[in-house]
Length: 336
Image (tube, rainbow, N blue to C red; front, side):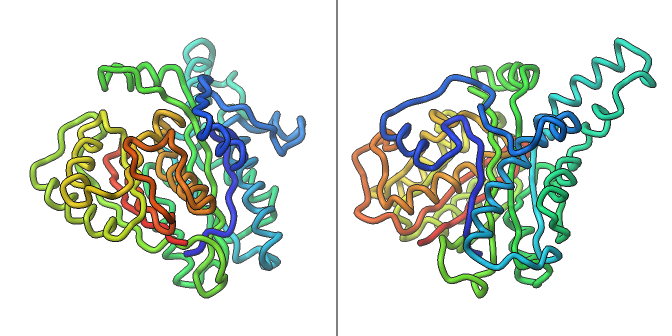
């Protein structure tokens, strides 16, 4: 697949140049919820929640960029594949509080309709007028389904996105489970993707491998998974210029570091994405793909991301490691 466009709302900014500048100057914003300028009118915003507004605004940005690069006139061949770990959690919490406090029949119907995790797809599909394959996955890999749809020619253009919003109760629960402050933040990242035969430019997603480790970020892996994880990690990082790993304070992050140090001692490893962007839950993989896209386009690595003085002469290929709370571990490889 080729990445031909991107739309995103992150804690480090909503523009690649802003993110790049903040990375180079070691600027970390402390707010949990991201500032963004909605693409929707005040009237339209009253019908939806913030979850849908985040998704729609980032997707419209992604679509507009792609529209300027290729023919997207066949709306039946354009769709959206999103993933999330918790869905519109803020809306669900608010609805639950209304149910507890009042008669369920007195609860807002608009609020209720927005508790459904894929309701936001209706908003953005109507906004863009697209009627191709679209769905919202829960704790799954949006890139693998997108790749299948493009290969089977069920779509010519798919916007693969990921989204999780910040919630105080969730942050408290995760901090308690992990035993430490997790710096929970939100992110929405959307990529415009086409099959390699449809577009020759852009960054290529060469390999995607997702498997379930049978544990979450804060639990011990089963013994039989160590060898399998090591073999996949070695396979996808051979000849890569850079590897982006998981939080080094987690067991999986520590294991990745041991494997890479043992097998590729001179490779450039980035394990500081959480320091800048925070723990973004189901948006972790998409966020790392976004960072990789920026690094490949800039063809260098900011010193603030390096944990040792190993800066590659060229940044042509990046291997990405991502692990979420549902136990899904993904390794991807991006190439210029």
